[in-house]
Length: 415
Image (cartoon, rainbow, N blue to C red; front, side, top):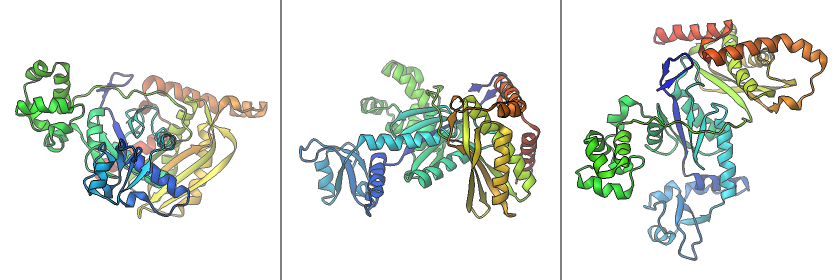
């Protein structure tokens, strides 16, 4: 359980993002970028070591290769016995690192708290980065869609209230899926799985568990914890806790500077009124501006996106006359972009993003600009300090409060 500065308890909001067939997908993208027409993800293909030495193993496999029973970690010569026509490609760590960094930078737009668990998977803590009434699963679907459209590969996203359950959820049906695993879903979704599917249960443990008559994760969860501790030591306690969905570990992260900052919100109903959309846009600008100032960054480009009830996406962007992190200036630019996009459309999603970020110290500000911006900077500074002290949701501007009230009313009516 997470506690905010006021001592209020909050359920943690955790995502686990796992790239589907990462090494093969990233190799495929690189080949397509070099002009090759064949997408190796559509044929029996594997990524492996030197086949000629007979020491190479399968590092990644396509879905077509999986259909032949080819498994990750088995020798390549065994894979060839199962599928003589399978194509083998060499891995390229520099290429993998490049695509991994692209994914990480995209995820940084949603939260500062990202743990790179491996080169192809990340934990994200969005506990303090969701607005009131924003749903974690909506962010999961948004991230999944953006990765596919902007980066060219797919991910599984696990949605939960702790790291363990998020990771377990992301391992459910693949590829390109979003799965939830909340506490009330553990028994139905997780307990029926084989014991070896539980995170941190290795081959050595399975034999001993089977001797105890334990076959499923549910069997572990229902077993006497003290007996498991006696048989397995500390690992017995961990297995029992994990089987019951208990995990208090934090998302371990290193704070890094994002290359872009954005926020979006899916609305409970289509909104046609431009004034209401502007109020929502102000709320989004508040959060984006807050994060810009937190990093001491200035934005040079503002982008506004809308999605209609027919799921059509439209976006416009504008280069600012001068880089800024002042909420009012970003909002004014965003308002103009929204007016260009709106055209009396019913809007179901609205998003704001700022790009071309530079450090405050890199910009020379004239005396006129300094005096002109002083009032707005002072207002932003006061708001930021209050948010840090009392929590983001406790302090809002008038426009932002209207947005929350509007969304609250719609949800209470069940719309």
